[in-house]
Length: 83
Image (cartoon, rainbow, N blue to C red; front, side, top):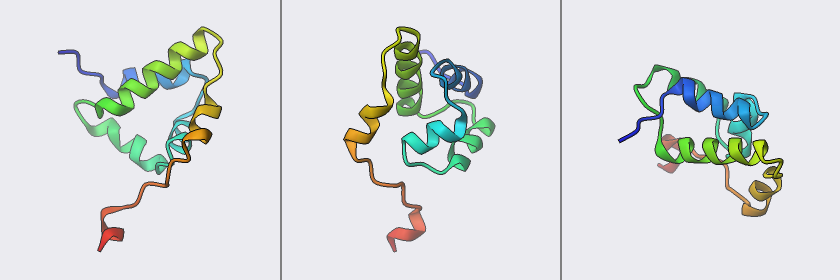
């Protein structure tokens, strides 16, 4: 199967007109979570899918940012916060 690497993730994020920090903010993630992917062989599928979709939406001039607001995504909690 196709494996999305960090460069492709960033390309899709830029295609969406976002910085890495803005992408992380939309998903209520730490910007470091995105930056740390640079050291991995591949990126999580859900991030790859979201980045690809919003990149395509931007290219088609479809607004997408409000969709994330409507989802009311809760901020990501670090594992240590669960204990």
